[in-house]
Length: 270
Image 1 (cartoon, rainbow, N blue to C red):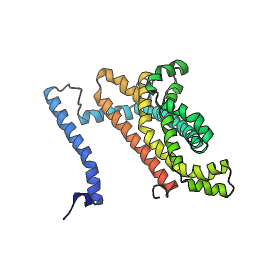
Image 2: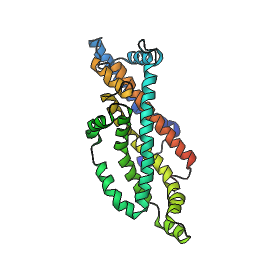
Image 3: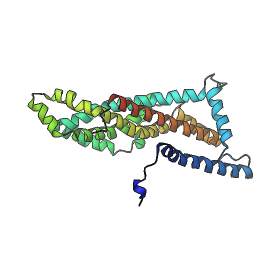
Image 4: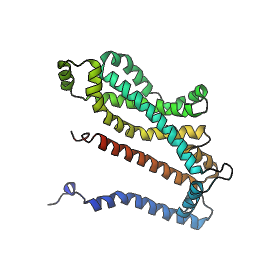
């Protein structure tokens, strides 16, 4: 008797099943869009696929008459720069602090309550404070990302450090290793792939803070563009931008996953 729990799809079936929900979403959207446009050809809520492609093509491949630049390209570069800077700084802080509080008890007692406290602060609530302190420039947007994801990453790295078998630490101490050698030769090599996983897990949150900051105070960026055109109900621009942001997030996650597998082939196989 065959049981569903034991049915493993083939590679082709697996790809088809993975694409099926997306195909259903597209079919439902096209059907709903055609129904609304049949009633009102000027309906802006659910524009046709052709209209979305036409609008995003203009932003991507036609120079802006006012600035002479390509809007989609400039928005993408600006957002990715802010995202990379914020996530990069957060990763460095999380690596240093997470390992420190995971290995050295004195630092654990000193910093753990502070990190726990900061992780409970609603980051968006302090956005006005950041704009007052750092102004409306790039620094405030990057700091918002850092404050939003660094405590999460630190707590994750700390937990991963605590999961390292105590036998390893005891053995290297028996062999005469000091604290610095334990951190650099035993702990850090095992934490690096977990740090990349932590970055992947917090990327979605980082995008939220980035889009929010750009929506409030920016002159270019993906979030800025979405909130700029919303006043005109330009769903033919908003929807493609949302899809583009999702595609960028997927590509970044894919690159990080491949990087982890190539650089640390042992990770995930223990």
